[in-house]
Length: 178
Image 1 (cartoon, helix red, strand yellow):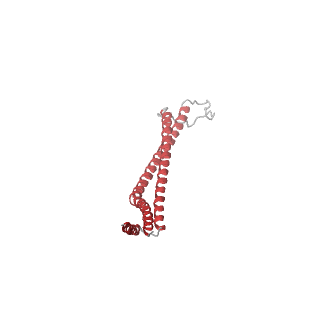
Image 2 (cartoon, rainbow, N blue to C red):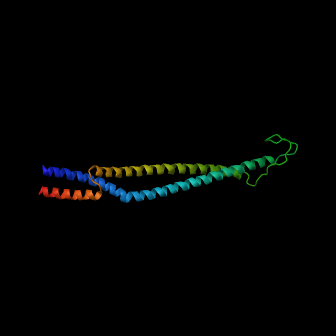
Image 3 (tube, rainbow, N blue to C red):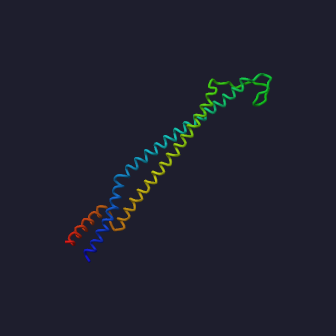
């Protein structure tokens, strides 16, 4: 009966060993790595968001230049006394000037629209990637917390106390087997 009691205690402690090892491994190995990875990933996301913002501003500025150029394109054909094709006025005191950029702006706007959309997709994809990492990190933290709770539920205040109890139980079990 004593041997069976020791065997049961020994088995319980071996299960706790696995929990303690999981907790210890997470605490010492994964947490610092996870924290560094989290900082790096969030920095990368900030950079991608920043790049997206720059492209959006460039697109906005290019569209404004395109509109200004379009007004200049219309204004170059204005003649005094003839109606304006936009407002219908017969007087043209301050016509818009056409820039040298011309049709290149249409192509530039189209290119920037594609780049802005690609940057937005990259930001969204990276954000999803970070959310998956955060979920993994949260699950790892939860597993480590559960391992701690298991030890504490068994009456251990620390891993050191657990190690001492395991060693003494093993010695008692080995003696009882002989």
